[in-house]
Amino acid sequence: MKIRLVPALLILIVMAVTIRLGFWQRDRAHQKEALQAQITQYENAAPQDVGAAPVALKDIEFHRVRAKGTFLPARVVYLDNRPYNDQPGFYVVMPLKLDGGGYVLVNRGWLPRSIDDRERIAPYETPAGSVEVEGIARADASRAFELGAGGSAPHQKIRQNLGVASYAAETGLPLQPFVIQQTGFVPTAQPPFKDGLVRDWPAPATDVERNIGYMFQWWGMAAAALGFGLYAARRAATKERMQGAGKQKPEPGPVHSAKDA
Image 1 (tube, rainbow, N blue to C red):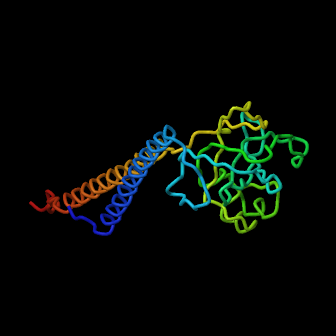
Image 2: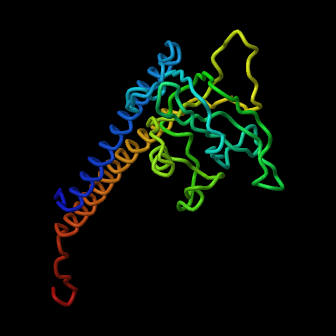
Image 3: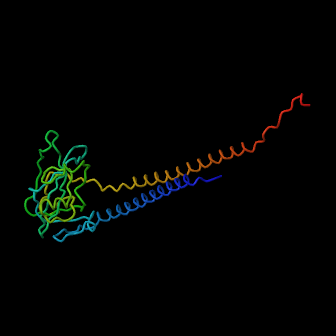
């Protein structure tokens, strides 16, 4: 059986690529599992204090943090299309002027949105003076799907998304490179402050199962390519064998009649 070089190379290339992509998805799943273990570890650790000194995002993301300062309600941003229990609403994001210097953005919580008037903001409370908050350091205040950047243009109270760096450039505030996803106020001797915001945050999604599924899909494609190659080779071999048998069949001799006798 002759092996046709070009089809064989194509099948080998497809198998090599799909097998490699399967291993890449497996590695991504392992990385996410390690991240999930780290997040669980951070949740049970003591909170880190946030001060004026900048902290790299990679050194603090998903850690519990604590910050003391004064909210700046005049610079609030409402992030739209953040549903909670199937109800439309906003995330209330507000800068906190730290007592020791510097600023940090705080995602204070969820606020329901009016169905009739998108720009009518439901009432909520902002504490006056210095306050101490606790939360989780996140890279941003959550990301929602957006076509273009029109819904996140600067100097709007209601936006689709909010980047820390872009907001720092817009306002001139020396912000920390992360957002505090507030879980509450630090307990004090005073009665706990109630601001009317919901802080029932979804757990960080690592989507390990998706990567595992993609891994098996890529390896399944590699197995399918191998099966197709073997099937095509078998058909080609069968066809060659039948053609060879046809060529070797003896030709019939001359036919003699009674007159030739």
